[in-house]
Length: 204
Image (cartoon, rainbow, N blue to C red; front, side, top):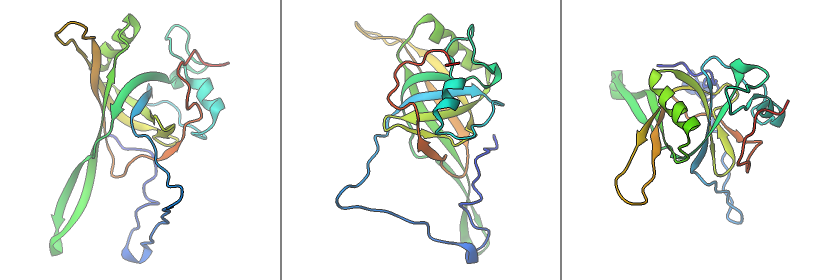
């Protein structure tokens, strides 16, 4: 199991005396709803640097580079943007019954289900490379322009497989998952490049 670097201790008190109820906000006039479909996976090496500010446009611009032949200024911290169709179902929760018949949550396994339908030669080689059992540092972005993963990302495994369906008009797809273990869902922030559809090499 990968240890996630996003701080969860601030959310979970050490004892009952420290338990505080977080704020809530519901509005009959203008309730906030956010489109949930995942449209981008942001992938970096597992030891890539953290963000100083996940909502800083300059940091993202300096790190995104789509071509290995033309890397970002700091290649070890390069981020690749994968355009996907994806979803995140409820995680698989591990529990244990302890003394006093109390049930405690010991962990969660989170899974993103993703597919890539742009199947050019470059993307095919990337998909093939995910079979090497590597760990990646991941952020994911929804259609609502929210980025999940916090300043230091999510360490997880990504596996993509080539799917070739029968039938006239069917297209190839790379379908797979991103999985990680963490007790709490990842932090959320506004994605500073929301609405961007093409990511050229990093702006230097």
